Image (cartoon, rainbow, N blue to C red; front, side):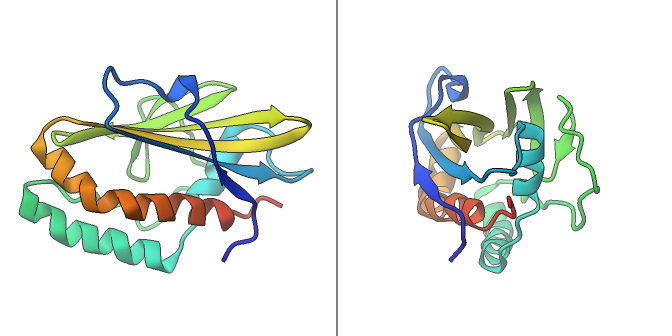
Length: 168
């Protein structure tokens, strides 16, 4: 497994962006002294994590979802060196909705579901934590059908990616 300390945490208020949320989770990773001190640097580090089993799951997903009438979303093979995270731009499979000094809000609105990923940094008792929260809203039965098998994998993927971030 990875080297970073990761914990499940409460959903920040800033992640509550939908009138109805059908799924939500939030994980935090302990940021070491000398680690990233802003959400842009932290998000860039997160986006660089590549785990073979996660890539395999995404490839499987992209073969199965067209059977449900859902478009397969493939991230670009190579990311630009310096991702901008400006609102309205695409970063991998994510559209950037908001970028301030305190948070980056990304996600996608699709026919079957809408989701957001919020990245923030919080200080608790002198420790700095990077917080990664996901919220999902189903737009129809396809969204529910799609996310039912995805949910348990999502609960494994995000903490694994956080544990394997190069944040030292």
